[in-house]
Image 1 (cartoon, helix red, strand yellow):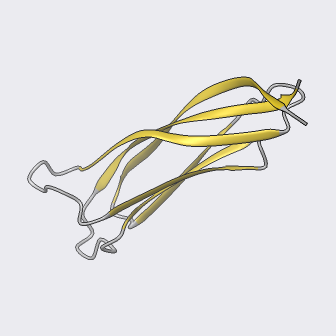
Image 2 (cartoon, rainbow, N blue to C red):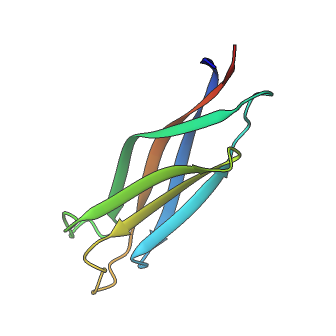
Length: 102
């Protein structure tokens, strides 16, 4: 069975300034009636240390996914385990696409 695009939803995940190594957040979605498949892809991110004197992440991992079609999840992690507990935060933008039968 062929699926067609029913609609899209832009999502903007915001991570408040924190010294936590891993930050996670979620956003509720509004899928159109009849949606059978939901896909999400990351469009971009802007994460930074709160202290302007600190530069460059050693490694930053960002993931986006959909849980059950009604919730978009995002996880950002400093892969150096943020041993010195620097304060960091930022935003991740993604696009959610809803598909259903013709």
